[in-house]
Image (cartoon, rainbow over all chains, first blue to last red; front, top):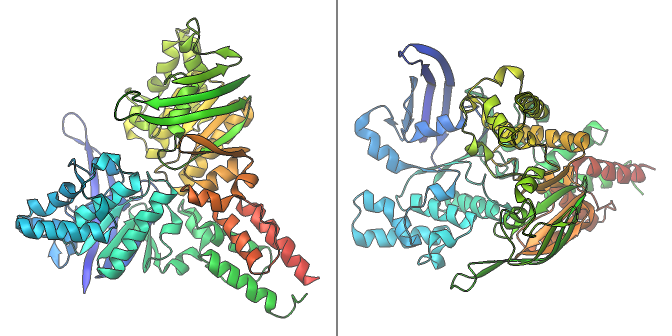
Length: 290
Length: 285
């Protein structure tokens, strides 16, 4: 079953002068065709201005395609009668936690979404409790959000989305403003939601180490999909990634550099554990005995 | 030329229920021409600390001395201090407001009462230092990409000709190449203009690559103050205070634990590469 299905999705920003004549057209998305299955964890990489966020904004119909079609759970985002269903099914989490929190108490903030969906009160409280437990913020339910750390605020924002029982969460650089601890908290939470609650996750990020656990990585450049595959397939292509202004995790780069210097290491090493294992094997294999 | 912080203390909302000690007994000497990384988790006091450096926030105890002069002296010219110590806040592109890139950068020097020629010279020079191409000089700042906007904002501070440049997370939200470009330019400015640079960052990899000294803040106090190698050797303590070492530092310690003897005082990919190659060549012999 596909959660998202985009067919030749194209979006143009049209700039007009004061008389309303077209001054310039920028293709922010250019023929993006892509399928994301239910339950997948997909990461999107791409430099600033590559079209990632424009794509994300199509998923809950904040933007409509200029050409092509995007189906969210089988619904065409251009058909207005599906608008509320689509927004309930695909929730978005943005970069700045302070822009997403509106209530003065954590549990009220989380309840805001389902309340607006017309969920009965008792059910709202049940959902609030479940979502806060799912992101590990239940003990903060009566706290004021502005006393929380950035990572905690983002988890509250994610709980607010979870309370709407979406099938898909789109996170647009959710960790860009957080410190290393906050980043780890948020990514761990998102991975758990994906694994335990089977929520489809679309994670947009500039941090390479956050995508190594994804099922699939998509690289965008100039409004197009230029690379897609498993993290290992993507991170095996160090030079190509760099040409798209991307990077690889430090240990991947280290392995790549060592290989270029003559050490027979495998391609696409993604973690410290894999690196140590590969070095250990190398040492044990013949020719390098002490 | 130096900044001396002497037993600096700062308490928010003293005497109220919200009283909170943000900085406690900070003793630091920041020497001329240093390139310093300031790290610490959110709320550790980094931003409060840097706002003391140009007198934006006044300490509730202790003193700040700039080139030997007490900045809290009633006769001290704080306005001049603020041109000498340039602060680039987080997301500085939100502060762009003029109609063209050039005018935005000219704004600071104009307020110094310089001649039009000097204002132009400074603006053009600053834009060149941050790598903004000539054809963008008359563009609206709002037409630029995120990375370009940020560089224009940094140029606005450079045009004041600061002796100390403090940047609060200058790479937040930029793509990897954009981060490298900005930091490379800052390094170049540091090397060529011989100015002191203080870089507040959440990226241990960036800090390790560029700076010569790291100051680690925790609960409003200085937890470590040393070279990157020595600071990241305390990676276990850093984790306890919400930080980490660069990934390559972990990789070297992990090799060591698996009985593969390598140098562990590495903080960059380049250093790690040399450490592993040295070990590897050892096995080959």
